[in-house]
Length: 110
Length: 116
Image (cartoon, rainbow over all chains, first blue to last red; front, side, top):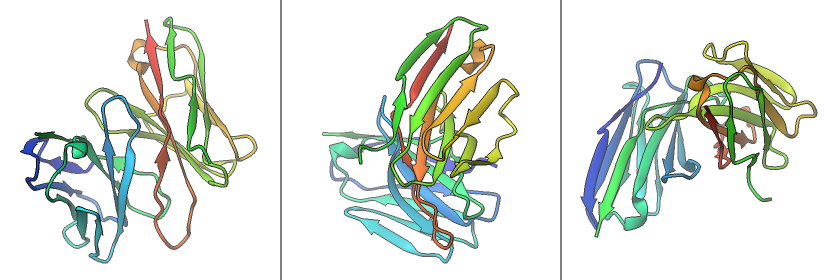
């Protein structure tokens, strides 16, 4: 089943923070986060595996709560380059074929 | 390593015609995936290969769709008797499978299909 992302859209000023959530009704093996800019391919951000780990990449980090079947993506001190649509992709096994949510559109304004 | 390459980038076809897309994955990546994306939606899984073996097909994939990866390198996706509902961006992704750890998939730029 398709994971549910929230919010659907968010508008930020440069420097503000945002949280994007991803929840699934199925047990998850991994959660993958991607960002896609208009007309471009999705770009991989990070992968989280079951175990409740948290990862960070520059000012973007994510957590994965296996028991709640939820993941959150944290963007701090947002930059204009963060604008785009963020997708979470979930997998119930190690096969790697992902089921993506509908996306969260993030707009960062100067 | 030039990333995942897809050809053509754009395809306009008349309803009822057959179309074929090609994907060249990152070299040495043994997994290859096909996704379809429509406006405002996330990528929708179609099928995936590990080497030359097609391991899974989505139930959404009708009999008009067929994919091959004959030598475990490039892949083709063919749509027969195209319908207007087939209009979408077709994305290919590849990854290096690791039995223990989940692996990231890298996407190509996609082939945008328009059926008129």
